[in-house]
Image (tube, rainbow, N blue to C red; front, side, top):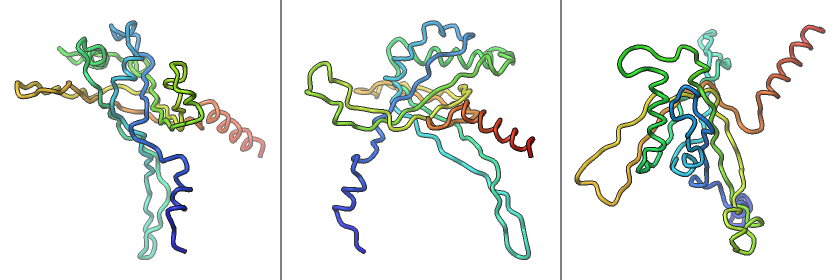
Length: 212
């Protein structure tokens, strides 16, 4: 059967997810970062202009068998996560990120924080969808209410490992500085899965095995 425009209109009833409707949040920085107490999380949400929803990767174990290869599911792996930030005049975002990396590894020698828990933090990325029912009458009270969270991912125990160079040039005009920051990620999970539910499932499985 040939699909028609009516079919795609039905399939895209929500209008399709838009890559520019998102928000990235790092609520707090490690206590050892000098600027942690003044970290402008709300400013970061605005100036973080690009990021990504996480990739999902599963390894494969290949078992040779009589001229064929039998594939078995391997281990899940988690890629690095990179965000792009607009640089403000006060370096309100870049400076704390530089200090965060300094906490992990000092500039002048090989020292740095020894405890992983002292330099790791969590972050979230939220994809928004448009909801016309929440727009209202266009009054000041309804401004900004037309977006709802469609999907949220939480990145657990991240820390920065690469803060990009900011290019300077006399030739640059009509532009604002930007930089990227690459984070290492222990793992991530979608909003439908929580640490608590994972722990409960593990406990239930253990109990079942013990009972059996």
